[in-house]
Every structure is written in C-alpha cells, then in structure tokens.
Image (cartoon, rainbow, N blue to C red):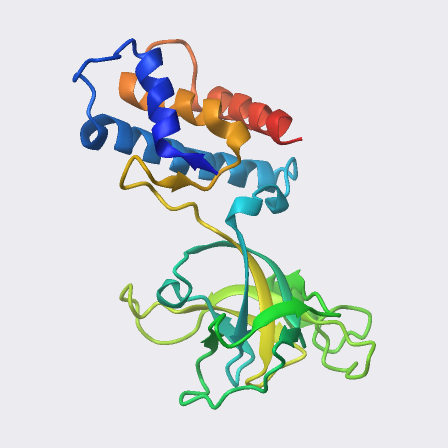
Length: 254
C-alpha cells in the first residue's frame, strides 16, 4: 500500500512548489490523487479484459468473506455489511470449511442472503470453486452433466457454477437495486465463502492509505500531475494514452 503523503511529496517536487502555498490538499492534491486512483481502475479493467493481467495481482484489495445464501441460492454483496464496494468476484466456494465450523443461522428473511461477520467464523478452505457462467450458459447447462452448474450430478462429482450479478427484485431507486449472484446446484440458506476484489477507496486525508501496490507510486504521481496540469494539445488521444498505460502497467506488474 501507499501513503497519500508520499505521492504528495513527489508531486510537490515535480511541480517545483516546495515551501509554496500555491497547491493545497483539498483543492489540488486530493482530487488529483483520487482521479488517479479511479483512472487506474479503468486501466486495470482494460488489462483484465484483454487477459494481460489477473485480478490476483491486486492482493491489497482482495478479501475473503463468508455468506449465507437466500432460499433462491443467491448472495448479495451489500457495502453496508462489508464496508467495501465489490469490484469483481474472484472465486465462489460452496461447502466451505470454517473456523469455528458453524451451522447456518436462522434467517428472518429467507428471500435475502446474510453476511456472516468475521467475529462468528472465518473461511479456511473448500473443495469446490464455482465456475462463472453467462446468462445463456446458465440456462443451457441446467441438465448437461458435462458442464458445471448442472443439477443432475448431486454426488461428489458435482461441479458448482454461479451466474454473475442480477437484479430481480422490484424497485429502481438506488436503495432498491439489489444485485445478487446465483449458485447452482442450488443452496437453500447454506454457507459459502467468497473471495472478491474491492474497489480502492478514495482518500480524504493525506495520511490515508492507497490500496495499490507500492510499485505503482510513480504511475499514480504522473496521472495525478496530469490532472493538475490539464495538459492539452500534445498530439495524443485517449486510445493511444490508454494503450500505453496498459502496457506500462502490465510490464510493472509482471
């Protein structure tokens, strides 16, 4: 991880502003650094999409938590429970070994999943890793014994799968949009371990941590400086700059 003040020191030096009050944290450095954090989310997404990087490169942002499915075999990732906003699901692990091993808890609303707090138990391991299916594969694989997520194989040879985020409940207000993943073979109010990538939180103070690898210090500094300087007319375009940034990021993370 990187302390925001480290980036600010390098930015001040690059701007030749030592001892000057020309640049302020709230007005200049905070929005510039937050812009750089968000910019590299998009660059990572592009690198993931092109399969040039794996999400596992961001161990600072990787979390594993325990959930209990709803009666529909679905899991909701509520930021109010996790304290995180989920960026990407890395692996879904049904039938987990926990410490301590606990039974599913009484769910007052079986139509919704539950987050199991780390004070109750933690994930240890699982023999299963659910495959991710798109919506078409999900429907077609239901009875196909050769594909993960089928409901025919219920013995030790079963293979789990999950369908990526869906919104099935009524309501379109921000507080009513409940996005869930669905697991098959179906798990009715059962415990599941999930490893996910969290979005990097933005900074509010110069003492805050930036949840990127330390090797990205200079990349973040350069991008934050671009935000401050607002350089224009240099002959570049968005596509070429992004491709260059992806290549630089991949080389750095290799």
